Amino acid sequence: MLRYTLMRLGIFAGCLVVVWGAVYSGIFPRGFGDSNFLWVLLLSLVLSAPISWVVLRRERERASVKIVNRVDRMKANLEANRSQEDVADDTARTQGEAAASN
Image 1 (cartoon, rainbow, N blue to C red):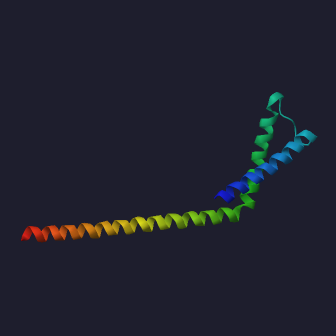
Image 2 (image 1 turned 120 degrees about the vertical axis):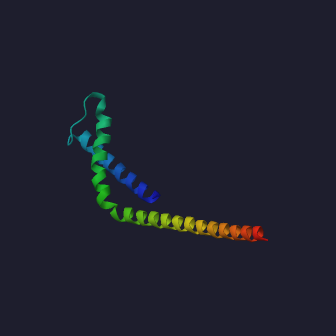
Image 3 (image 1 turned 60 degrees about the horizontal axis):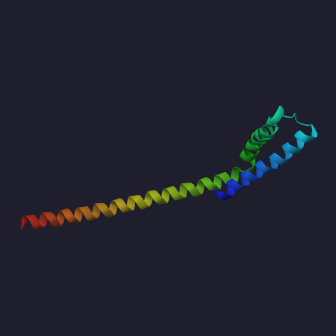
């Protein structure tokens, strides 16, 4: 997941540099007054989102497979713990009933 996040930030940084250059060269319009920096950030975000969606598809799928595997492993561990508790509880009840009948 860290790799995906860093790749996403890299794409955003690249878009930020391209948009910044395009705004100051006059290709894209400048923001009003002091809002130019916010304009550049928002435009970079809007451009980087679909690029990340397409370019990082495989990385996203790898991350989701790892997450699903981790969740499945945690569920299996929880189920194993539950079954161990059930066996211990059944054993304790059986021993308690045997002691009570004597």
